[in-house]
Length: 114
Length: 109
Image (cartoon, rainbow over all chains, first blue to last red; front, side):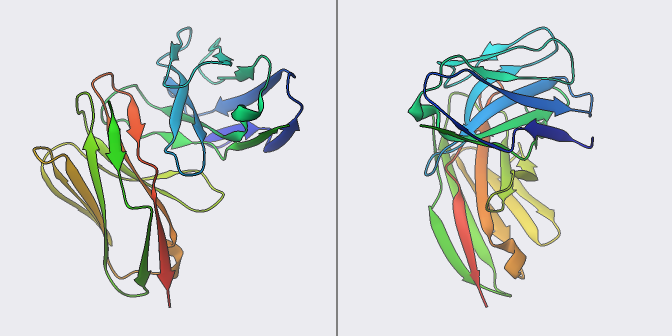
């Protein structure tokens, strides 16, 4: 593994189903983030984690949950998917949470909720 | 509220120079980033500014004026591979990144 990986690459999901998007990084970064990207809108932060064992809510957290059991993994769970959660989801990480820390992005997961 | 404005789309000619502007109004300011995103791919880091002035990095330069809430990304000697979206993002008082919607740059031969 080099950098950040996400799985699956894409998924079509029936409304009401539960779904977990996986994110793993091998850079030993402390901070990790989940964003969604929708056409015409900027990246919007869903949840973040400044260090293993801690998480926080971003701009659009409703309907999503995360956990950070260790440094490398940061899964995002949709408990009961709705069509408005159709989006491209990006996981990112940075060495630390702070003003000048460049974020590195995974390749994204394209999710369609029908 | 927090707001970052960028033009939606710009067109430029191969070999030319283009300037992509970004204006911001955020709760606090702890730096401004520019990222490049090719269609269907992840954003990748281009530049970071926290002090006023120009930062030059090869063909790309980024400028910041904190008093005006303004930045621009300057791309010189444009190449076809520069066709991408360019995202402006500001670190706010909570050290979270607030993102603009991005500027799609189309390069024509």
